[in-house]
Image (tube, rainbow, N blue to C red; front, side):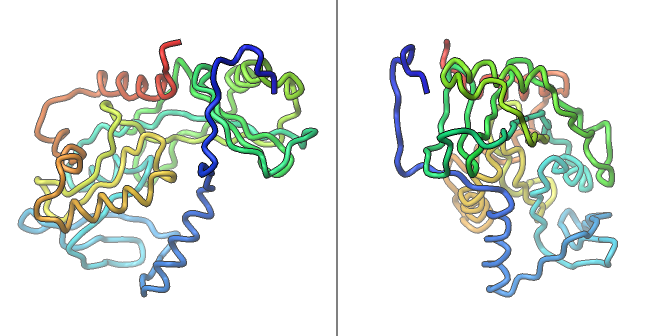
Length: 276
């Protein structure tokens, strides 16, 4: 890498990365050891409430009685909340990265990197380069435009954006410029207008608990989110921080979708903003 124009570099030896599949499998394994039953390929059809409280969940495999429903549905968290009549500004914003063919001198022992003034991040994956970035003009989808049973709109690789990531990074690593790309990762991480998670029980529907709007931290922050979630449900006097994450901030105060979508995109667009 070419560091001639770099003013400062910070290396954190304890940093690392996690892959979503491995994280989910690890949680599933530990939950299974504690007797939790995981049911995949199951469609939620209805959340039944009685006297202002969650009573059961109806699925295509039957009904499940419960005192709590935790909505951790990612890009569909908006739709699950709508099942109990809650309108929450959970805005899916497009994000992309690519993986190259194997490159000389690339190996798994290299550190992950972030380049805030170029809005880039990356790491070695085997002998290949994974490179992603944050767009300055983000693309979002309106969750009101599709239903819970429909998939979110597909994300086609945007080669203008991906090649821009390549061009930015080539100023630091010229030998990676134009490397053949073997895979594009893409999806709809969700963002909120204030950039904070939506965590906790709704005061409008007792037993309905949010764990959404994670602002691209759903996987990396999942253990912390779980801890905050438990605090929000069990602790009779949760911390001020947890109280600030409550879904009630969006159900008890006015907001509108036009502003919410602009503000949520702004959170994404300035994710690495350091004023350069």
